[in-house]
Length: 340
Image 1 (cartoon, rainbow, N blue to C red):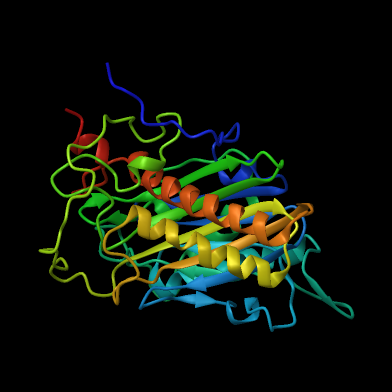
Image 2 (image 1 turned 45 degrees about the vertical axis):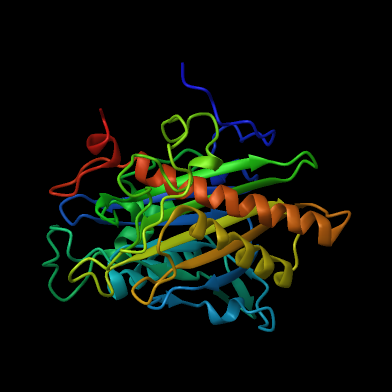
């Protein structure tokens, strides 16, 4: 009998996904011939947002306005996309779709949707990237936002379709946690790091201690809970080809500055799930969203708790993204490799 290590008391939401946070939907769109895709996080109404970027090679759009000193307080959507710089076009597709719905920042008679975005590199994964003069990401952005729902696919879906995690197939992962104060925390990750998500020579995820309800395999404890890997070296030719993109969300009412602190704390989840992380070769970005439903009675204490659990939830989402992925071409999945 395998003794469970899941002794914590914090329960997960009914979907174990970022959409357990009331007021959020997620939409995916992708092309398996292209081996790339787009994921959109869509709040029902504009949400307070912030960002924290730690990677050495980020590719982003409209992230400067998320600084607490900037004027715009809320965003209409967040876009995570494959395609490297070409994938930034996905935000234009989402912006156009939202404007058609009358959603956005109003300046007199003009409506300008606020749609920050970040991209990962999946151009060398064997997909057909011969798109000529017009990359497909604008349309994929439109398709993704139109498909937004509380239920969405993980693994080889959306921005996770072409992702690779170290030498394993990467993917799209999500997780949630319910706090006794009534606050919900959720995370979504498109997992494409140069680092490894598993302990060297084992099937154990680095995020193993944070697993809930067997969400990534329920393995017995590793023989060595800390396996040193000083001999790590970057894979040949990997420069600039990696990134983990995360959105963390809560229904707690946060200011923009508090959302910034949440994003900063949530970044620790990447360090709990990937080694190495935040490298010169990754474009790691964490967005934070507040849908603004539950006031904080003790802002400092409660925000610290939310941030702590957000980091754990991010780590779980990263492991789930790899666990749920399927092999694609020559890139083997976690479950295929460790099926025995």
